[in-house]
Image 1 (tube, rainbow, N blue to C red):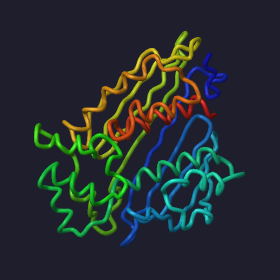
Image 2: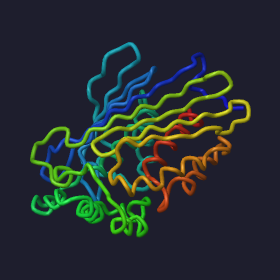
Image 3: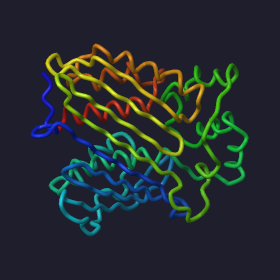
Image 4: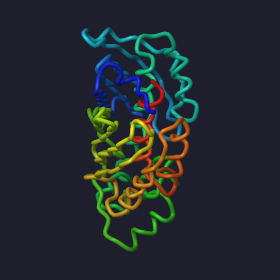
Length: 294
């Protein structure tokens, strides 16, 4: 039997996350995330370097109660020097412990770390190669972000091989690799997660739309049995259409899976890893977190 804490006393829950990147420094970006739901809103802004260090130089946050205005910015000094790599979530949790909206701030920090993988700073003449098409963009990706190789199917050897066998298109542009100084909103993202009780089922959906991604996933869970009975996705925009498309059908492997504390681990092999899709995994894992951890 699935008991979702976020649906106690209500049949629907919605969380909206807006994130964007501003090119504010010669060697760093400012990543801002605004996370809002029916109960609370938070905003987290961090100045951070890109790959390979992903180091936060300074961070600040503010909180908005359900029926109130945003608070003044508060510095998060404990995050200065933190690297957005393994162990980052734990460090953020320690830094915001006891603060209003602590759980929301941890989730916002995770989104900041994800934004840090969406823009980089290359020499302009090198970034200009992106205009030549998908293959050039893919090569720039692999050299621009240290953690991309084998992070998903597209950046695996199998994904690379498909460039020679099929037509591939991409929305990637040179400004994502070398944005002009001072450019605002280099990259903009919106994510919407919804939980809804519909009769004997719980419907969980998550969408993400940004400069290069368009994902809309939906799961139906039998509340009594605690099992996923339907799973579907739409991907109107992908970084490399024709290659990123390959692992999207893996979502069907979740039908029949029990929604238990170990499902977040199992989906790493079912829909993630070098044969899967990192975005599909993240969107699904975030839904499971809403179902199980709150």
